[in-house]
Length: 134
Length: 134
DNA sequence: TTCTATGCAAATATTTTGCAACTCT
DNA sequence: AGAGTTGCAAAATATTTGCATAGAA
Image (cartoon, rainbow over all chains, first blue to last red; front, top):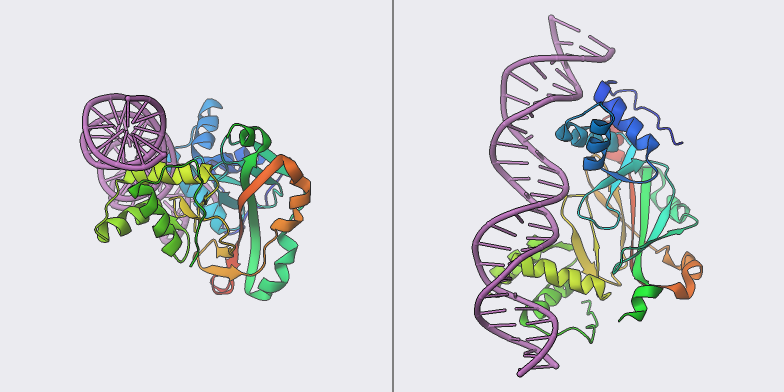
């Protein structure tokens, strides 16, 4: 199970702890509304706007990365260092997990001027099944 | 200026033509609301919900890719084949353009079972300026 | 003609903001 | 105590949907 390092300048509040624990437990990227729902169900509710604020803060401090998987309209968050990449079918939205990570080829270009905290690669296309039904 | 190939099964309507032209003219990714605004200003208005539907259709037919740059909350669209990647500062949101494209390293793995129509890579981090003010 | 796409209105979903009360340190 | 954080309400933004009509093939 993944574990994030807490940015030392951030106060440890109940809500921040809970949000981070939820992310650590999650199998993949999670939306703000998911986090809120999971916490409510667990009997430790945190208000949605607070979740948004906490997530923003964590992203700014390099603990999380924010993206949109599946292009579902909602942003999703996951711990930095979750190194998985996917191919997504734009028709049926099936996800095909990939292996390997292309980050290293960019590191030299950025050099000292940019401190990489996370990254994300998504490949879009049409899967075999959907290609047939065209 | 980029030019997309029309998916032959799609009817050519005024609205679809206009949306695609807007994308072809754009320097980078554009949001649905932007497209609507630009077309309205040009005296060729298209209703926002129509723009959304047209964009969805184009994505499903492999003409566009949908993403979120800058994590601004709105989805943005660009022609498939616009091969630019960025590093984004999670604090000040500055964008640093990158060179090169990591896609090729994944092509063998997907092989025949997936027809790639687009992809997206974003690198997150903290830029030099923001790192100082910590 | 036939089937699909669009305009429009209205619903739904997502994210942000203001402010008083509260909690870490 | 002081600074930063949260709960809550409410606004702002973004996206989707239903349906009658218009338009492409």
